[in-house]
Length: 162
Image (cartoon, rainbow, N blue to C red; front, side):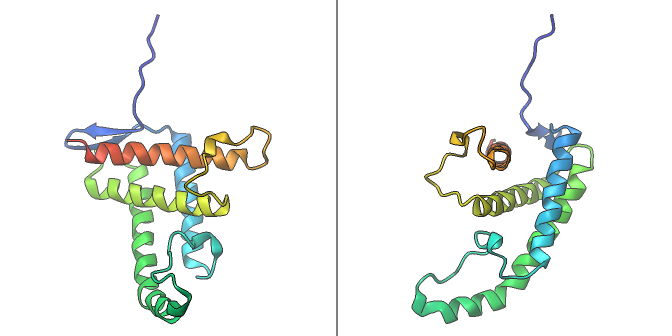
């Protein structure tokens, strides 16, 4: 009888990294990153992006400072995220090993997806997305959030292990 053995979603491999994701998982990440790309090039006031580009100044009396920061930095931050999305999309189509820059872009992309989804679901640090009822209309989105969190955790763990 064959024994099932867990393979982490990402692992060190030949001086780089290997993604152990099936085609469906890779396609899902590509599709989500494509949606993120559309959000990034769309209107800058989209509420789904509030956690991706948080306020630099939080006090109401500093609203002008925050507006100036956003005006000066927003374009550069968007460009950086778009380059990261392109890097991850290409990395998902390549054979291992992936290099550290590709895996760093993957971390940034996964985190961005989690931030957007967490905003849409109105999740806070106190919420446990696994506590959602199966019959909740947003159960699928919560499961997706958990999957992205799990994948991000493994990516960070793999990048930081020696």
